[in-house]
Amino acid sequence: MQDSDGPVQAARPPLVVQGGMGVGVSGWGLARAVSLAGGLGVVSGVGLDTLVARRLQLGDRGGHLRRALAAFPHPEVAGRVLQRYFVAGGIGARQAFAAAPMPVIAPGRRAAELALVANFAEVFLAKEGHDRPVGVNYMEKLQMSTPASLYGAMLAGVDYVLMGAGIPARIPTLLDDFAKGSRGELPVDVAGEGEPALTARFDPGPLLAPGVAAGGPVSPPARPRFIAVVSSHLLAAYLARDVRTRPDGFVVEGPTAGGHNAPPRGQLVLDASGEPVYGPRDEVDLTKMSALRLPFWLAGGCASPDALAGALRAGAAGVQVGSAFALSEESGLAPEVKRLLAEAAEAGTLRVRTDPRASPTGFPLKVAELPGTTSDAGVRDGRRRVCDVGYLRVPFRSPEGRIGYRCPAEPVGAHVRKGGQAEDTTGRICLCNGLIAAVGLGQRRRSGSVEPAVVTIGGDLRFLASMVDAVGPVPYPAGDVVRYLLTGAAAGR
Image (cartoon, rainbow, N blue to C red; front, side, top):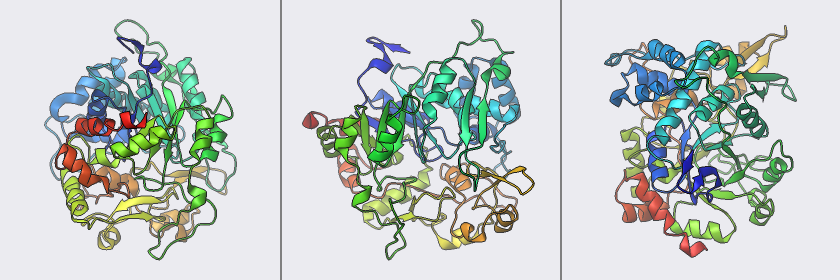
């Protein structure tokens, strides 16, 4: 993709990177608005197959997905996805969504096609009608679903790939292989085992070879830049040491950032409220980051012009901002969730808890305490445990050597039958269902209930008063947030 000055990839690194948030919070509309305003818009690639399947079942309001699917370079693949999930006029208000296939190490054709098309569609819509760069964000923990999803984003010309929640050492090689036209492989962790012994593979040839684009077979996609999300200069140095693992830059995320946080270094210590205690060992040495000679962005409490100026003076390329964009007009958060967050934040009553147990991944998770969500013990305990989306399931090997899948947020009995420990299930929240519910697409149950939301946001919302003064009340336009933040650029140079 080119602009008037040549390839986007050769341009100056963006000063403002929009965080890839939740499932559907950083949707294509938000990413497009941020990119058009001069930042790097980033779509969340997590759970896109489920989101697209559900939006098609709701009738694809506005026709955006059908427009994107019409641009998919293999029409017969997109046509099958449309035929499986699209419901003209939408399903009934009480009708359950048909499920997307749950992730497994070797997905079938239907699962691979849906992941391909969904990730293509989201990036295509974010890039539609302009030549500014767009990124996509994935979680390293979701190893089984990454290869097909990433290839779909590359088919749409994604410019940057960002990944955290783990050690994304194999992503540079995966991108290289796809850009060469080769199949991609990603090692998959198996519960209770050391070095990954299983591999998730995606070979576009057998899946797409029968299809022909309008002008002939599709060429291998261009390689996007890769940005690793880290919380330690030690991890950054580890990744930068070898060309096979070296990213094109880093996002350095502090413990106030929303979503998943890295656990504190050393032995876990909890404070009186049961939250992890972070100390000097968790501070990132920015001098050592600069010595790696790769661009880096600071994240966590950086939603102000002063924070951007300070980051630039410290040698960073800029800042990554999430929470400020989560409250914007274009954010995918359900309107009621935005309203509750804004009202509580402005009143000074919003509590955001760093919960060490909530996430099945084992990483601490920022959880906003809002009525009607799973942060309410009554709501959480009243929810019937069910695992029917499955992104955070991990493979395990049975005594007979067979591979199965389990998650500590699934029903306790099922988890124990699969060899898991009952104590691992305590306090766990089904993030798959809960985060999808936060964007208004929660599953409708036969009981008549709808899955309750899990809401995550940054732990430092002191920016909000100044943000509202500068750009208006919540929800404000995302483009105005970018322009406000960029006013700090001159002071940092």
